[in-house]
Amino acid sequence: MKEQLYTIPVNDAFDADCECPICYMYQELQNSAIDFVMGTSYMEDDVRMETDKIGFCDTHLPLLYKNQNRLGLGLMMLTHMDKTMKEMEKKMNQKVQAPSLFKKGKTASSAVKEYSDRLEESCYVCERMKNMFDRYVHTTLYLYDKDESFRNKFASCKGFCTKHYALLYEMAPTEISSKLLGGFIETLNKVYMENFRRVRDDLEWFTDKFDYRYADAPWKNSKDALIRAIQKTNSVFVEEKKK
Image: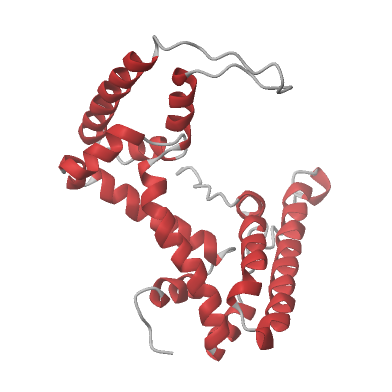
C-alpha cells in the first residue's frame, strides 16, 4: 500500500524495536507537541489564548519544564495565572449551592470548584495530541484490514501495553471487516499475551539476580526488564539516569 500522511508514522512505530507501537506513536506525538509549545509558538496569540484558558495537566507541565525554555514557560504560566485569577474573582462571590434533599450522596456545588475541576481536567498539550493520536490508532486498524504486509508486521511485533491492547480489542469490531476480524483478534491476543509473558519472565530473572545464589549467573535479557515491565503495565516510558 502506498504510504500516506498517517500511514508513515504508523509503519515507523511498528518497525521500531519497542514493547508497544501504540505507546511509541503516543510518545512521538507528545515530544512533537512539547517542542511545538516550547518553540516560538508560545508567542503566537492564538496559542497563548488557549494556554491561558486551559493550562497544562500534571503529566505535561513537568515535561514542559524539562524542555529548558524557562522563559517561554514562565511567560505562559504568568498569563495563565492572570487568567485564573480573573476567572476566580468572578466566581468566588457566587453562592455555594446546597445539595438537593432528594438526591442522596450529592455534595454542595460551587462555581469555584467547577472551574477548578475544569482546569484540572484540561491541557493544551493533551488537546493538541488527541485528534492525531486517534487518527493513528484508526490507521493501524485500517492498515491491518487493507494491507497484507502490514498484517505480517503486526503479527511479528513485540505486542502492546495492556491499555493499548484493550483499546485495539475494543475498536476492532467497527474498524476491521468481518472476514478478517476473527484473525485479527486471535493475532492481537497472541502477540499481547506472549510478549507480556516474555517481559514478565525477564522481570522475574531481574529480581532473581538480587539473590546471592544467582550473583554470578548471566543477566540474559533482564537488565532493562523493570523499565519494559512499567511500559507493558502502565504505558509509561521511563528514562534511565545517565551515569
